[in-house]
Image (cartoon, rainbow, N blue to C red; front, side):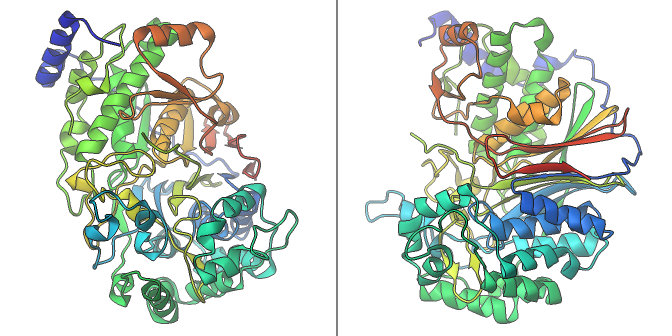
Length: 571
């Protein structure tokens, strides 16, 4: 598609002058009303695996709260869903404590080891070395999940950490039957798993993925979880477990030290909060890029009379808002402890007004036209769960080891499968990572720095209804959660939110990824007429949502029907 000279002049003029002047006379919106102080009297959990959901419900039945249940769910997922998350990875969470309304973002993201050297991720010709970035110990950041579980238990839970970890320990010790997703993930990564003796011993049976019906035990991870249960944070980051982790990593060519592990700390940060159509969205701040992008998109859409547009026009404005938010994602965002970011600008409604004015009403904006700073398909690697307990505590947790089965490297004697999160840094600025996202110097690797993430755990708080929402899916996490938030605000229930068809645009590549059936024939024709390139792809994501209707005091929980092993359950 090409723009006429007149439109090129208009567009560039709008982009170069975008700013507060566009909205100087706009009246301020009334703030959204947060959830009423109320107790549902029962609980709901939605997670990616029924064993994990049941572990959370078991801990709630023992007198735990949503935060104890989160420890149980996450640790059990480490055992039964290692293709997506685990002790060797990290998580981000947004929680709301009912007793005082405290809202906080828990940052248990992985960090780069002190000895990180960008040259280790380059081929001799200077191109990115994808193997070093994605496979083996050089691809692994220092894990944050064990510290985050201990932090949640100590600062927000009611039960001892050992009680909350008990279901995971039991499952790892006594065994479980791997589901089809895990068996397929092992088969997919079998060649990489064979490169590491401890990985092959843990995941392969006779050199192959386990067959359906296999009872699979994980005694090494059970022992590591037991040490964490007894000793808390120090049980993983110091002493026996830490020594085994470092020894295994260094023997295989990695650069971790015991000081890297001993120095790891969980960070508490203020979440991002934005008002939209009578709701308050509480979401993840950097080092997640998701919350900033979601807030920027909602700010753009807030000035569009969406209910007066036909379906194709509404989709057009959503895609253009996605495009602009991902452009800013690539240029500005990184670890807030290392990088000064223009968040006041990015989150400003006035900045959004300028971006909105640059959207042509009946034409797609080529990404090449926007001032700026061939991707792999984003997959379901990462996991999310949502919880509301009987007292109204709520937590949204997104946890990851990055790509399928992370680095495929298991540290011998620990049962811990390490992440490959170093790929989430801009290892080579301007070159895409495995999810096709570009990065700048703001996300360059530095020892002790947290890599940028798309994880977007979110709460949507309204006068009459509340939702806890999130999803895996690489760069599509941001657009999935955005579309889920919009669907919830439009009145859809939990099952409809997780099942709805999805579309995605991330600035580059300049295309719209679409699930089959997301648009009808008329909408498809109109979008193509506007200049959009629609790219069909297989279903993506694994959203897990809990909703609370304050009018009826009813909870609802649903897991994405795209994956058969998830379970949303009300207790």
